[in-house]
Length: 230
Image (cartoon, rainbow, N blue to C red; front, side, top):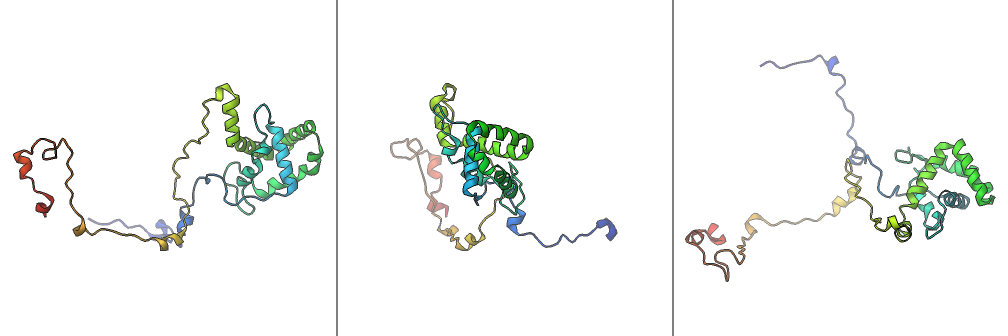
């Protein structure tokens, strides 16, 4: 049988270049649980603005805590993409732009009363819809993920008596997560040689020949033991 051949120009460039590093090749296609390992650091004013704005979006009371009481800023800090990295995961918020929007609110927002803060947030929703939706979504997700809020739902809402605090399974990642290659040098394994493996006869009470069981049949008698099998 003759083989097929193609001109080199039809094959194109077959040089695929250098092989990627394993961690780069198998970079996760899903965000890590719990957000980024590195938390974004906010200034004191930015923290105060985040807490105050979150408290306006989800007011506490009637047995429910305020967002500022359940660590909402720390949750937000885990889900903002650090400066210099491309925002790949929901809510697609980059550190530089997010902080710039917070700075626009600044002291004026903190000095306003609760009613005025609500009006300011309404204006931000119209003028900076991307920032507002990112912040609002983080507040909702962060607040309702807190154990204190789950407890409040169980205790204060009749329809929430059986609301489960445990998260649903995250499922499998599409690819392997990054690993620490230095761990391979610490692995110590062991094995048992085939000739050292011992045969063990295990009989249950209802098997022939077991103590208290029925006597073995002539066929059972004819079966070799472990030692005889060798």
